[in-house]
Image 1 (cartoon, helix red, strand yellow):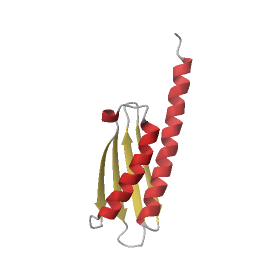
Image 2 (cartoon, rainbow, N blue to C red; image 1 turned 30 degrees about the vertical axis):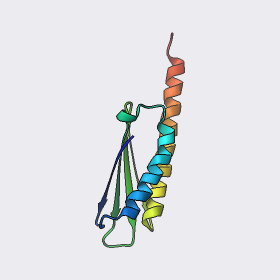
Image 3 (cartoon, rainbow, N blue to C red; image 1 turned 60 degrees about the horizontal axis):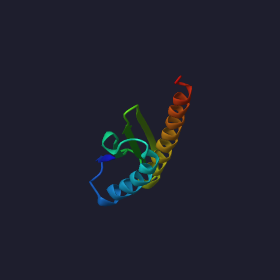
Image 4 (tube, helix red, strand yellow; image 1 turned 45 degrees about the vertical axis):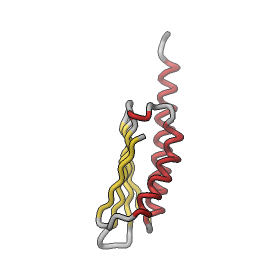
Length: 107
């Protein structure tokens, strides 16, 4: 899986990137079904300049679909954690849909 990470309204910090990479490795376990070169994950962490609120946005591009989510949190880690939880749910839902479609096809 190829990953990129960017920040908005924040200074680049290795702590943010390391936390993102940790979560991306765990998410990769759900994506073993897909070829690694065809899976692309982009994450963005931004801070609301008017409030103490962080937003994490994830975009996952698979060969069959593109999944997106955006979650808010009081700190950067909770926003990233919530976004990865939502993305995990979306991946599992998509994989079960692929399995159902495969079973329905006539041979």
